Amino acid sequence: MTGTLWISRRVLLLLLVLSWPGSVPALEALVVGTWVLAPGDPRFGELGVINEYTADGEVTIVIFETPDCKQPEYAARGLWAIVDGMLTILLTESSDDSILPSGHRRLEQIIELDGELMVVRSEVSGNLLYRLKADTCFKVT
Image 1 (tube, one colour):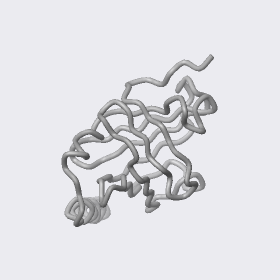
Image 2 (tube, one colour):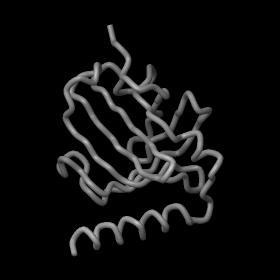
Image 3 (cartoon, helix red, strand yellow):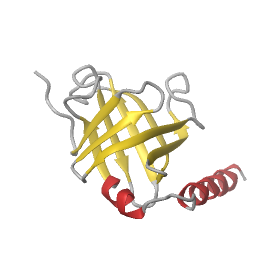
Image 4 (tube, helix red, strand yellow):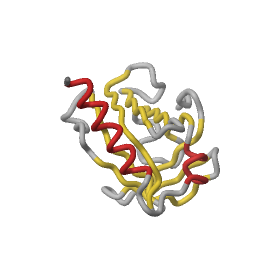
């Protein structure tokens, strides 16, 4: 019963996010793929982050203790969509609720998105966050 409830809740949330007025399929297609922290990001060189966005609206986030992305510290899964120019993420699973809990919603205003570079403004901090489409983190020297 719990599995069925979780799937039903997940499907409902996905339908809600993807059917939201202002959803932009062309921009969403540019987001699909794996993104890592890029030079210019305030956290670049301090830790590693890999976000993987799938075409069916799921996201996996892995935060690493080191910028070389070899020691995972945290992982989460959730749903994503672009709504009114905002990259919207709703976490459905979290490996550590003290870092980001399940149910957490993150909004980032899209500043630039071309399929290779993504620049967003964090709704929480106001900082510009830079990401590059890549399968692995960059070596920081």
